Image (cartoon, rainbow, N blue to C red):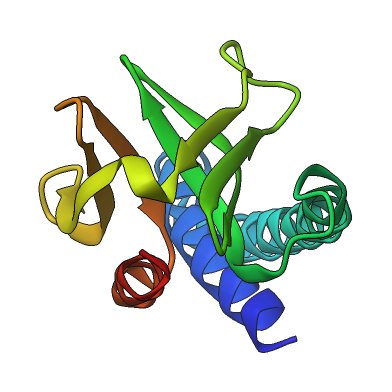
Length: 162
């Protein structure tokens, strides 16, 4: 519930401020403030509900794709594949990392990384300044990148599982 409220507030406030400015320029300050507040609240509510539904769906799917393996950590993530950020769900088990994408992504193939293939895991900045990036360097020198919530928690969990 706390995550739902946090998403509602962050998304709603950011969208509401932006739309308030747009509506304020078009219709005047008073109408802009009211329209921004209403649109922000509706947008925040919509995004919070959408993410809650997706989280429930992916938690069910993660149990299926791990074939009964114990899930060490899981959560929403973006997989950085070429120039696209593929949204989905990241799952860490005792021997692998799996990523399942949302069905509405252009590139929606799953990603599987065996833990014994990982040479190094390190934090990186997303968009150059947000500390949510996760870089996994494989023993064959290829690199897989994800954007996650709780970057430090993911790095600790992966290092411990390795």
